[in-house]
Image (cartoon, rainbow, N blue to C red):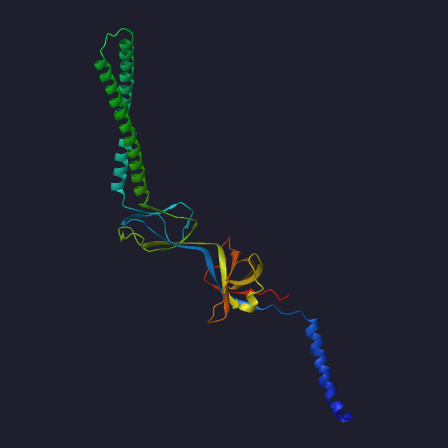
Length: 282
């Protein structure tokens, strides 16, 4: 066995002391959590369009306005649709023909019953007269039933006219800020053409791509600390993991994750980059 001389041992002692101190420091000091860069984006970012073509009659909002769900944003020209709704309403609500048919059925029913009674008791009316009354009654019932069906059809046509009118008013499908108006009053638009961009910034995602090994420690529902810029300062917020991709990108070896965080006052503007603190490995 090779033995070190006293001179060589004396030379190694300082190095051995430094190595031991370093090892003790590594054991004693806590590990620093790793961070990963990512980008913020709003939870809801919608581009709204009309389902029908037309000419924009009025813009009811301006960029920067906050809209509640269901509020009108803009209107297409709708005079023709309004007239059609009124016409269908009058037809649908008119009960004159149906009431007259119902009265006719009731009158012929009474007449038929009286004729049948005379035929059965005194034979003062002939069989042919009774059959004629029965035929008149059945025809009146058939006419009444036809008018009932016509009324139901008119009600459906009225509802369809109302739906066409509603399509001329573009409303917010959810709450959010109007960040872009893509058409002005007087301009034509096609069906499904983008008209308004609506963004809700009260809840946001932090989206990042992490190494697969680090991502293995993440799971939905887990709380994660985020550092996000707000003007000249950096805010520390806590978010919740809502998505961990079930697949790893084969080109980069990275795993996509999403962390949802609250942003009620809009201090953090979606689109800015930030950092997430990865949990320490157990």
